Image (cartoon, rainbow, N blue to C red; front, side):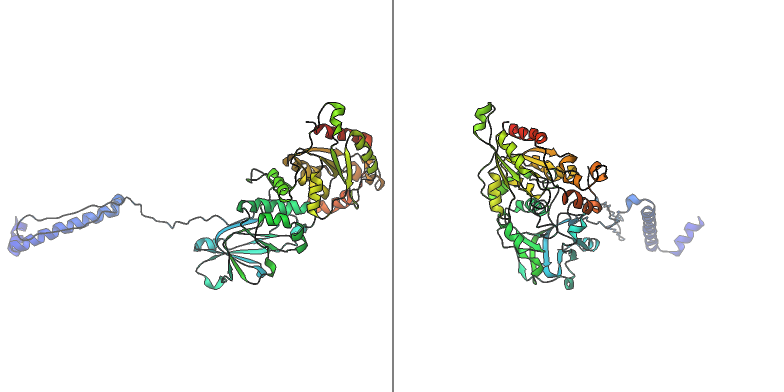
Length: 468
């Protein structure tokens, strides 16, 4: 053929061999490129060795295919970090941190040093008021607003140096808000503090903002049982304190009680803790016999909580006489400020009775199976149930309430019979906006004159409950 003769004449045999091999290699490269472009499954095809022998013998072309089992990442993987602050709970905002935590007290700023740059940038800061009455602006406005900052560890210019290092966890909370009112001391501070700190078995440091020394002194036995370290007034602290763990705010989940679905502790655990703290001897109320007169040789003890300013009993002597006739030993007293004395006194009684108010808070010191009688004033049904009715049962106490009639309320002397205050008192939850008006009328202006004939059945029931 002309093409073959031309090729033979133009090149020597050695040159022809070179051209043949070059053509073969070129075809191979073109074929491989085609496969790579149009067959994605061959994208890990790898030529590792091509060897060609030109001096006699067989020409060798060695090819090895290597396919990786690891998929090629075409995205940036972002590790989701759990937020350190929960501001969605209806009762209290709370932050829980583990790692490098630094608090600069008098600047009201807490720094959490994070090694995760992206997470630090995504969750920069939170504002926390460490008091457990979220949503009540009147209470929360007086509580210091703390700023919690998450800072990337390489931003050294924003990170304050440590002045003092601690090896135990810290809990930050406030004693402002409504603290100072006996009921709120327990429901807003002491019960939440118990839930938050009991786990640490007193190996925890308390840092208090808005600290009031008289408040600390009043509840000193409780505070010392929960933490063995001296309390730090963080508002006066000029140095930077560093901790490995910190909780800002207190865990609260139920009014004057503990929601066991959200806590490893119960209200019964709290009352047992209090009785141990104040060395209270009576664990259970008196158990009366059911055989009539013989059972009345032991007189169950009834404590009637009196009030000197609002929600007073205006005929307490009549109530006392009737109670004694039923078989009770009766004491009428307004509880004092010395909590140790109050605890021992209340613990010695089997029945506690009072108009809805802070005095009933002392039911925490009653022995188990004691009876609580709450006198429910006009318009107080919902607040009475939430504040004391449900908590009494959570404390393993027996509970009775006595809802007064319009004629037993002093409000009948202040408003016409057809007035909405008397005819349509609030029965359900009172809104924050309406609380001031509600309090002024139903809590601050109302006294009670018990209809002893009507009330007798409630006292008899209390006596019978001590027999069961």
